[in-house]
Length: 54
Image 1 (cartoon, rainbow, N blue to C red):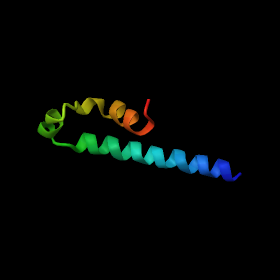
Image 2: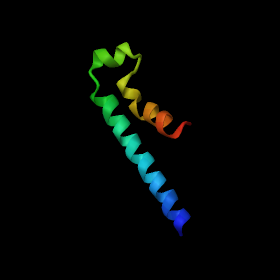
Image 3: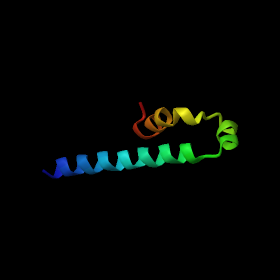
């Protein structure tokens, strides 16, 4: 049971980090995003790779 709770907590923390990352990328000013070579339309893909590493 403890391992289940640990796994659940880990998944919830990763999902929260994913959501924060997506929101940060989307709220980034366009000129800053382009300077960093980030397309805001790719926010979900970038956040997924950053958080889950896939």
